[in-house]
Image 1 (cartoon, rainbow, N blue to C red):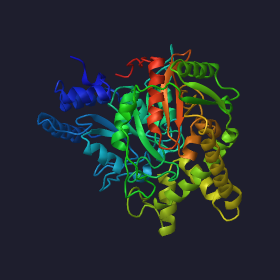
Image 2 (cartoon, rainbow, N blue to C red):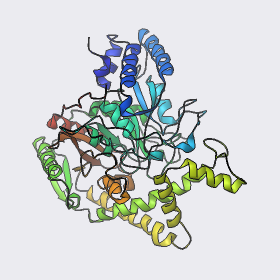
Image 3 (cartoon, rainbow, N blue to C red):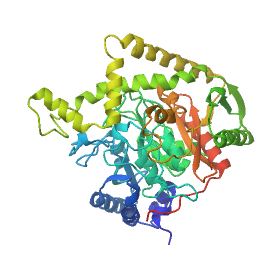
Image 4 (cartoon, helix red, strand yellow):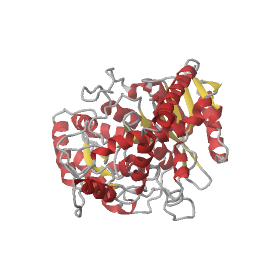
Length: 492
């Protein structure tokens, strides 16, 4: 019999409904794999008892011919999503011991549809990072290794636990969040599919905030169909989130396999960067040919404001982080310093002990750009340029349906390679931040391997709330690439 953990999310869903496998069997198979994969450090906490209880409840429903769209399917949850009575840390020491008394909207919708929670996934602290090395719980290790090397590689960030666990088959799918590329970049580095929906498509309520105008939740999965299934459950209007859009959620899975003939695919010349590996340029050219062969029309476009996206992001995101992280003071929940003389020193010592270096760096930057003497020069100007970037993209979408680019500027890199130079680390987001600034949907699809045998992804960007067309394009890209490579199981 096939190990249930080897089935894709959609295949497992169908097998559960056909009663050829039980949710408890699938859950135990995943828990066994998680136990054997401690070297990857993908999970902050494993909720084995809760998972088995949820699986038994799902089996009861399935036995009665009932159940939701994800009934009995075991998932991993990024530790940025609040889960009722389950430790939620955002990868930070400052949230030690925090057990929320409420459930995030996204996870509550997944449980509504019958999904099973395996545990909480490791991540960069407060989602600030591109390598999953800023977590208080230590770095996540990429399941992939370069040929002939046992060097530990980054799984990308901040959703490194999500990408690594899906790639290593430790869960059927995982929730993730994307503030500047934190779904798509790790997906690219681990040969998984990552989808960042349009801003407002998925509720942010109950997700620990990093940068509120940029954060958006989405799935990381093994293939495009799995992503379509998972996003359908995650998306939807939420009156508790003032930025949530009240619009019907399409059946994304139904869009898969529909013809892409006649779609216009934009190729922006500004994404051809100096020093970009030739293999990524070659894969991009191959992706263009695949879309052309599928019947798409390729249109060369120009997005000259792209070069400002990264500097704008690294003003806006830290500014919002500075504001959002002011609530962590050691008073009501989380870590509190033991040694302090008065309330001011309690705040200072708690934050000094509780926040890591990268979080402190971004809070300092954000506080600086919001300060009285610099607000106009930095933050206000960045917001004006952000609006211009959005307008430029909307203008481009008058002549194209989708935009095709590389997902990341490199394959997976060794842990420690870029930690000493924050600017080098920030450049990992160069292809992805534009979608966050403009609120557009974007996705990464695995498309090939570099000369070291490491995965590379291609990115598709769509018009606001046009995830259906994006899924059509993703599926066409996936079918053309025929990517089936998986990492060798060196960790078990």
